Image 1 (cartoon, helix red, strand yellow):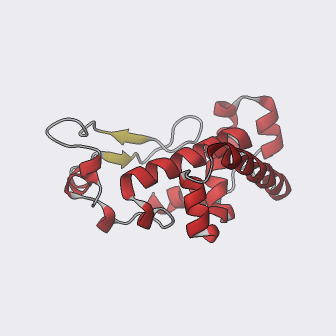
Image 2 (spheres, one colour):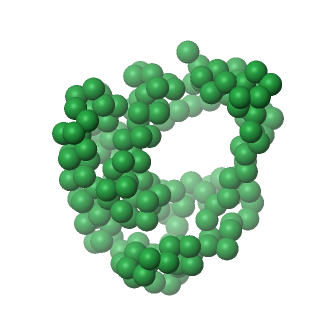
Length: 173
């Protein structure tokens, strides 16, 4: 299941049925999610549009944004097409919303994990005691079956904020 989830996020899984263009045009995302098949040319166009949106948002937010810090620190990480594609998929290939999501992700990552971890994958050793306990107790799990639209389902137990757990305590200093 973990490998299947990884493949879905990275786009290594093909879905039978309509093209990305048809799914996006219909507006019925839930019913067509399991039928989505990416058109490489359209994906390339969406990545170009996303880059323009990122540049626009960057000019508005300024040099102190987490995006700008990440871009200055490691442009290969931020400009990786697989990295950007994950945000496009999460927003049904809407470049404007994907750029806002990417900016928000980097802001949160910077706040929780700091500048030194901004442009690399988060590892278990990056978690604090609370984060490790939450994982140990199964606070968040990927369920073995998908929903009716073919999406992965995450199940969470709200341990954060209860029994002394804190979000900042979940990450390593």
